[in-house]
Length: 303
Image (cartoon, rainbow, N blue to C red; front, side, top):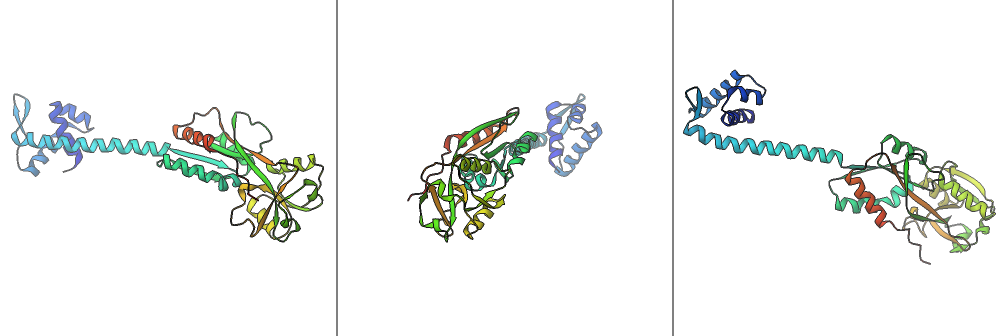
């Protein structure tokens, strides 16, 4: 005996028709008769009496009908709930394509807050190069992209400013500037520097900043990974200008020293982008609201 057999029996009682029952269950009329006979064999009692070409339930049949109706209804309701849950879970995924520094150091707190309010929603974060993020949004590979210092508008893309990330001068602990908390921009002239690759927008921003102050530096290395840059700085290879958010608490004053400029404030703009032609699901809209509502610039280091 299985659920399908109970459903056939229930439908036969409800429709009072072998043909309609067969149609509802995608089987033949003879299959309906066979399943009724099988039930009677298992239960060892008659379920129907035929009266003038009609079927009438026996007392045993009436008892079994009530039970069958409850079991089948419970089964059908369970199937509906599971399908709804499956469809909801499949659609409730937010995909974020972000530059490494923002994804690792700034975004995680907002994801945690979002997951507290929307625990059933999956958030997938992929760290990508700036040049790849635009393609991810256009192709639909990601719902949101996060980047710093975009230098041009992107066709078909909505760009929302979500805050500013303070940039600081970074030195190794053995550097002569490690004894200072602040310097004038001109004091770094001629020093060895480790920069991002030229294709990275934050690099373009730093280049413009130094040019505006009439300062030329010696480009010692160009790297595409912020962790690699920090390692090179801590090893004494050179100085760098990096986002404050990327320097962890345990790195400060142990491997890396933070210096600010006395005659300039340096902050890079952070933007969230998404495809304006694509309708955002409710979960994505909720995440966007949390991000825009709660984002705050990185607090400055005291001292």
